[in-house]
Amino acid sequence: MNHIVFPFENKPGVRRLSFYLATEQWVATHLPDDDYLFTWVVNPTVICGRHQDIPLEVDMEYCRANGIDIVRRHSGGGCVYADCGNIMISFITPGRGRSIEQIFSGYTSMIVSRLRTLGIEAEASGRNDISVSGRKISGGAFYRQGERNISHSTMLHSIDPRHISNAITPSRAKLASHGVTSVASRVVTLAELYPDLSFERLRSTLESVGPEDTTTVLSHDDIKAIEVIQQSYDDPSRLMTIHNCNHSDDL
Image 1 (tube, rainbow, N blue to C red):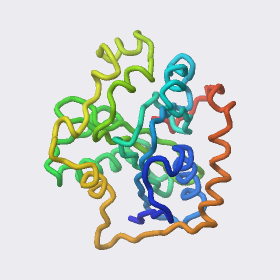
Image 2: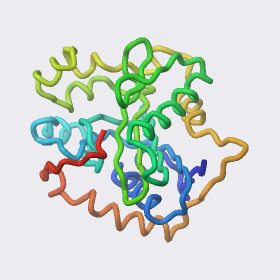
Image 3: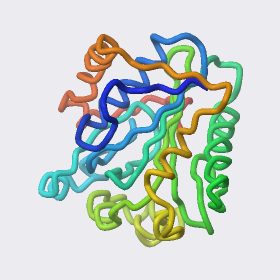
Image 4: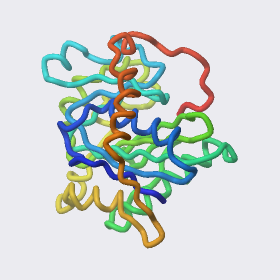
């Protein structure tokens, strides 16, 4: 495992969420074959999947009024909310020798294993979630960038549930099909389940470096190259463009 290290303090407010999505792409296209992992934390943001009709799925007026950013990612899946109580995890792996299910199963198993070292009774659930006692603490998505596989997911520590309910507005039919009555009812924070678990301890466990692991510290030139990729994510027209192509790599 190779751990990506940023040449700045990686905390909320330093970078938009789009910068970290661009970092995933840069790692996948510029670094040698290996498994790469990094975590990141951002100010309040709604992250939307490649197929989402954002005006129908997101209360854009509420987001503007409450300073919540909106970004569209390349991977599939629905809209999710992140803020400084949420840890985002990115995992980039080489090759096409495994199925999507195998790749993502290996990724979620790794995260579940790390959570269990903290005494958290986590388990993989569904195709791309991690749950505790039947309630979701993490959701993930996947896509391919050339010959690389990119997985990313949330990890809810102490997120503000009000914004989940008010910023994201999926149709009632979609919620009914999943057997839930609201977005908030589907999720629970680890701080609620494990009040003694600090944000710092959770994050350090998720990004823990093993004895055989290595690290890659990004240079300032690397950051400039990532910022070029970021510009495509920050294009306002991207929010209004629905990517309806049949993309078999989506989760």
